[in-house]
Image (tube, rainbow, N blue to C red; front, side):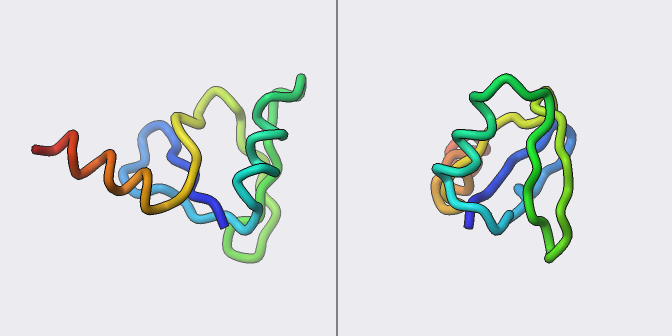
Length: 67
């Protein structure tokens, strides 16, 4: 499972795909990324994805920026 932070959303979404799968989909030539969110396939525009990675890594980064 991977956390995906989207522009305009405070809490990262937790998607079913692994980090490597998301990374491969982000860096290919397509405009959209297909992920499984809550058991439903969703297509996200790459332009709105700010960050992706392990959930703990993203949460720690947000805590540091708030201090």
